Image (tube, rainbow, N blue to C red):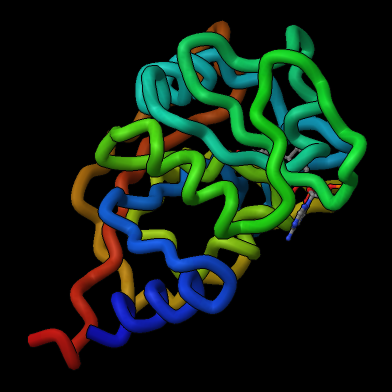
Amino acid sequence: MLLRYLKSYICNSVAELRLDMKVAAIVAIDKNWAIGRQGGLLCHLPADLRHFKSVTMGYPIIMGRKTFESFPRGPLPGRLNIVLTHNDDYRPSGVTVCHNMNEALAIAQAEGRDRCYIIGGGSIYALFAFIIDEIYLTQIHSQFDDADTFFPPIDQPQWEIVEQEDFPADERNPFPYSFIHLKRKIHSTEM
Ligand SMILES: NC(=O)c1ccc[n+]([C@@H]2O[C@H](COP(=O)([O-])OP(=O)(O)OC[C@H]3O[C@@H](n4cnc5c(N)ncnc54)[C@H](OP(=O)(O)O)[C@@H]3O)[C@@H](O)[C@H]2O)c1
């Protein structure tokens, strides 16, 4: 029960929040776990954008202020956009602004869905790393040496691949890529 305990401890440390939804991260990484450069994505991969949309549609999505501001057309439709910032005066339209992890989780949970998605960027993946149950990983089989933002290191033995699909590069997607669905294994103390 260590994971559940940690989850409950983290949540209860600020607010009396009982999590009864899954918390999943969705991210595209390169060979070095890089996720971004100069405020934007590493590359344009239309297949990944479609995958992101189909996985997250209808669910609350939680993101950092910088990731939100990188969207060319504002909030992502069909999903509750929850944006984290320290700034009390930040009020862009079409999103729910919050100021800490617990508030974001409480708002997501109030949607009544069985899960929410942490969609980045680097600081937000790191903030939620301990309570993420699943990762929808797009592995881009390339390396971007000028990347400046990274996914936090994961403890590989704690995770298992439950699904993987591999795709070659094509005329629209310039790099080979894989969609990998990871789940955190039950901690040994839970058995
Ligand atoms: N490859 C992918 O799948 C993927 C996905 C998403 C993003 N990205 C990339 O990641 C990069 C952005 O990541 P980033 O780490 O620079 O920025 P970010 O995580 O998107 O946003 C950082 C901002 O979030 C707010 N924040 C962070 N922690 C907070 C906390 N504990 N409480 C309240 N607010 C908090 C702060 O906003 P204030 O400064 O307003 O206080 C902070 O400046 C971009 O290059 C983007 O394209 C890649």
